[in-house]
Image (cartoon, rainbow over all chains, first blue to last red; front, side, top):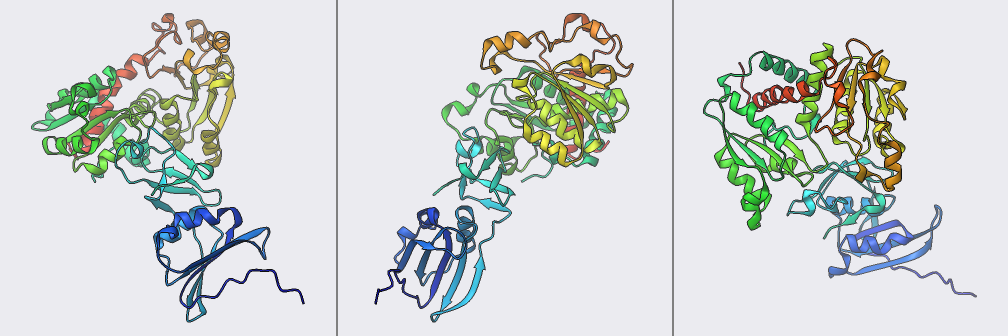
Length: 153
Length: 303
């Protein structure tokens, strides 16, 4: 009998499972949510075959629930991810990640001549294209597009 | 944050634009009025701009206002490393209104959020220059009697021209037809063309002015700069194509007016100056009236 070679990721009792992370974004998600800095029990994996196309990553975090800021950050790097909220080993809620209409303080403006890159001004963007993730700076009015999105700490 | 600030042309609704234009025409008839009696206006020019600054200061002086400020960052505490926020917060205590030009984009928007008094953007880097747009609109309104349904030709540096971009965005609310005349290297950027298409606004593109000027209402000239060309030879090929000469105006409409944000170098030849359709110097004078109107609106000064 051939043992199933798939790595079994243990279920969690209470917490959050982020599923359907694009394979190549897994570590970006960990970084953006600051998961390397928290003490909670975290299990993650990548390279799973996805019921949709390609491969996916999964992150399970014990005893942590994502707030709105976290969901917005997630929307920037993995807009198609799914959030499962777990209580007593049961999935009590499933949430789709939604790209918000505006983003405050998370993304750096791509324009070096923007006031936000010259003085201590919190960035603020209007999301002008949710599908292709195009952000218009509230201050300098320039567009920071998908490939130029850099997350600030 | 003060909602009477003017940072970007879209801070004004279409109705507000018309309100300010009507106010400007009243100031044109009567520019010397004591509406700013007892008011102090801070003129903060973090980078030099003699033309805009003198225009604003004339506008303020003719309304009886007093001015404080500086014309160059090197003569201010910015040189000591003071942040923009601190400079604005200090001036907020002294003045009733701020007029500000700054090389950093977004600086005026930030200043309008930091200050309790209104901020008028006199130019923030390569971003906005809304008072220029308003004086351009006023000039068009004054000479054509309306802003609606006009045929507008823009010539020269349409890629980097801040005034051109702002003008087409502002006019887009008034059902215009645009003609863009520029060398390939300096053509109107795709983003603006897409914007016009989405709004259903007609535009055509040309390499030469002669194709369109006989049927146009407004000819807006801008300078084609050598520095904007990657290849000096490319500049040499086109530098005379975008020069307006008096002979080119023989078959133009009577109501045609020629505008230029100035300073003019060689793109309008001197023989055009005597043509009654040349309007660029009056356009600069209109800057005073437009700015008087904007200042009064910012301070809610009714007559």
